[in-house]
View 1 (cartoon, rainbow, N blue to C red):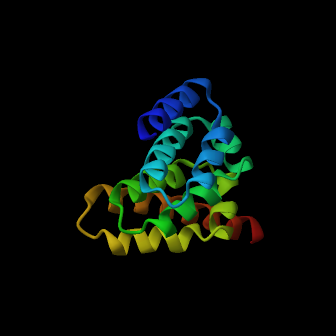
View 2 (view 1 turned 90 degrees about the vertical axis):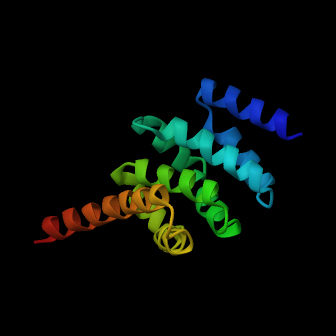
Length: 142
């Protein structure tokens, strides 16, 4: 089962189809391995690709990633991959991340994995984007 899931994730990354990945993550939310592979696949799709970041958000990917972090808080791999997705999201997705509980999930992951340099770095990256967005909104309001 797990090997087929991993193979399917690899195929979906090649096709650039986040909605099927997100459906699989939602359907198998209690399975840690499914969340690891799903977050990994979304992470690959989101990396430096604004259109895929929009597709991921539109398909409910942000909510799925945050849920994966909340469901598997002790899993450093889920935390790291999820944080990288949130850090890679463009400014338009930042409000959606906040609404989905993403800021709290980022902070919780950083608190849960204080010894992981990778988690700390990805968490700082995710929080930095949110702070930049808030700074820009404040400047516009002035």
